Length: 393
Length: 243
Image (cartoon, rainbow over all chains, first blue to last red; front, side):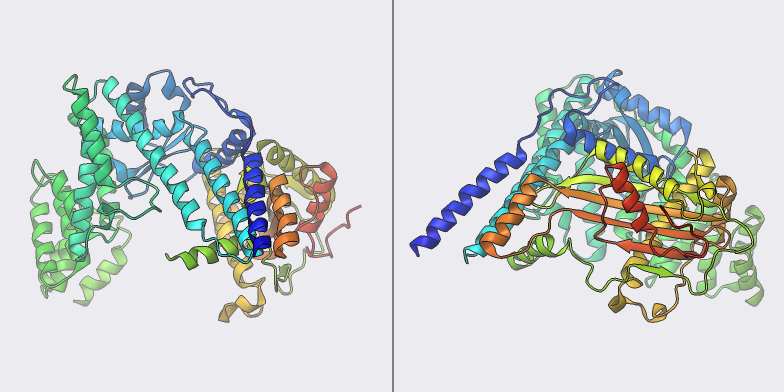
């Protein structure tokens, strides 16, 4: 027995030494405040080189939104938020992805999803997210995260080997992983607050930071309600969560705004709306295809605060048509018909109306609507199929 | 996830992941394929996908910029000198821009997906899908012909290598694990695969993969050894044996 304890003590001592040796490496200092920022130390150089390959592929991707106007608008917001000199270190990519997200690579590649643009309502909200991502960059979070991951796994490896050798059962892996995720959540909070500082200093409305998360919660609630479940995103997921809960983020950003007090409070609602407007039909269309009825309905309603445009009505019709629960097709036909009365009615509204009427047993009305669609969209990809439907009914 | 699941995960991670080649067939060739005997063919080599890093005690790989850059250079030179189908016929695809770059990016991703399928369901006998028991029927589609026209090649060669050299910490763990606990822990991972695509039809005609490759890709000599291993099984008829 005594021999085994001694062995175990030796093991732990050895493991501790080995991990300390493994994690000793050149530290990096300073923050990427200038355009010519370079990686410091071999680990950061390695991370950069990996993301250079990522950027090479990304920059040739078909999923990139290459709209010049939108790009320069986003860059303008970023530069206003983090400073004209510092923003030069960032290369911005807008990726067609309907999920609410943005990301930052250690080498200055910032990716903004189109799903983010659909959810932001003004410039200050978008600046909140861009500031958060820049916070990850300037605080060199990728490097810190990689080191945490490496140390966690090294400890886990040593202790697992040691425990299996001493016949014990040291189930420390979950604890170690929890430590790593706590570190990750701390990084997210740090980036949130760094982003907030930028936002406030740039003269943007400080309250907008909390708004982003308040609306994320509301969307999560709407999604969950439609599915008949509880909003999981708003509950503590336990020690393995990589990000703090939306509720928590909302709370401390609200506190930060209160502390900051009233000051310059630029929101840039009109500017944001007109910059994103050309992409709106695509953004909405991609969201509808996510099969997230509650979330999509919530977003459409939040976009329609000043009234339902033809584009929004047509999207709502499509949302109901695709869900097709009892009563949904009737509702869809109603929304499509309302859309056709609007000046900005998209041709797809006629298609949706025709398909809905066909389902409702009104072949005459269906044929008229589909005919109108094909008249407005002569190059429609589904022309042959629709013509077959019209002839067959 | 419960504790036991985590323990399982960690055990799999440390002891098994690095040695998966249990019943792997290294390469596969489309039945009946041969290079046309009447004319010389040109092989278009796409930028090798190379990753070199160091593996920490816990198995986390830290990419190494210097090693990766020199490995890519050495490997490209080695592919040219090893000359799969005669040195004059190796063409390296130049950097593309605009639509060409987008097309290339598309096909790189497509090739990777198809290659993953081949690795998982063709080169492992037990994993074969019911419709893929025999033969070698994989294609990227004839749209790839455009890439052949841009680069000027009859066949396209994709090369992937992923190396992680065991760090001092990993080697200490390995020695300790075998001495103290009697468990084998692998150190380092050296995986690679190469595939040849007919740039007219898009058919994958040959693929070769190995999870335990030799040759230190960071050195010129090692890269030649690696290139030879990567091209093992490439149809012999048209292939000049390397020095």
